[in-house]
Length: 493
Image (cartoon, rainbow, N blue to C red; front, side, top):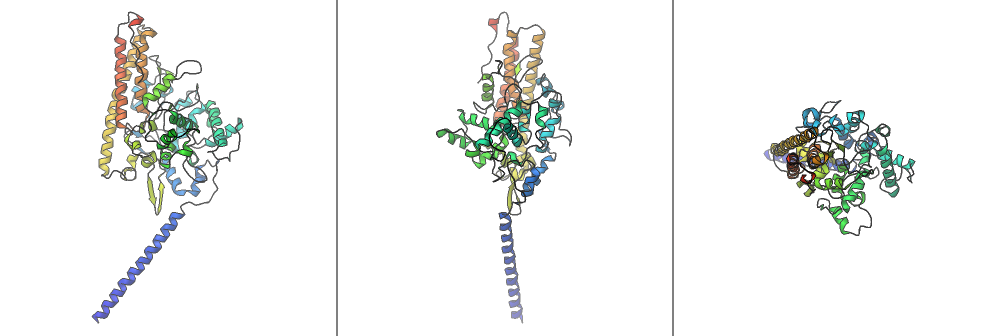
């Protein structure tokens, strides 16, 4: 009787195990099948498929996370606001009003919101509604690839809209349209676009492979490749430099997939000139460091023969520079870039949905997604990671405020000297030092990581800003009995 019960129990256990194995096998097979069919071919996508909702029918997982960029997120040093308006940086930091006086940024300057707001925020800013702007502003604020190509075709470019973008016809249409749209009044240009950044801006519609479509980036990265600046974090450029260089560097043909996971972001998260006197360009002819960009600007002249500047400061009369948002440039000087970590690794980390691994298209700060963004490499508690980031950002923020204070003090000193009758010659050295100091302060202030992308580089830049501003104040104290007594402008490093 006992033996019979034991045999029955063993048989039952074996049957349960066999059933479990069969269930596991079926689950594995289902997961493999799921992984093989993660794309749903419902609509045909092409080079004119601008609406992200169309892409979302074939790629619902990516589209769902892309739509979440409309959700408001913020960290201590980034983002914020309401559904209708981003946080006002000028109210949070009144020094900026003095630093930007005479320029549109002194009227309206706000913290970033998600990608979903990039076009509407630009359309609504007082920098556009109260100041005349050109269509160049749309280069990094709208899904403009098709608009550029249509305008290019209307102005003599050959081919059709169905030509692959990465073709001689596609590139020619893109470049011609970019130049024409950039010269339009903003109100005319904005009527040509409907969406903020969309799938077509970063993905080939046939293969979904990453690509870059912004004409100024394609022009700028080509100039960067032709420069002599060391670029160890961009191996495809270093490889191209060692070749015969018969063809210009083209990231869509030569860059690695990991590089493209940064280049797709670097199309817009960069420093550039966006004004009425010249076609929009990225100033990378000499490299990506703050002083290399400055040296390029100092060597440029406008068509009227004057040297390059963004505006003449209303208080000091200095010809000064305005930084945009040089995340790619600062990241390029940091440890993550040198370690092969891309922008997408941290801001669009991989995530799993069932058996499928996809990039999270809810682009946001890694601090809001530490597990996926940071802990895949840094095996430490989340509290330790966020504490280290906080230390870096708080120290850089303290340096930034000191640099702003020094720059404001210099501006006020120059303004006072002008009021007291100082000659243009007597003010020359101080104004040059204001240009240097203000450029460095703004480079870090406009960059959206509060120094985290390259902490030591950010601290170096801010240290130079403080030194330049204080040197400018000292220059105003020098004897001015004759023009020969004037201090020489500080040379560019």
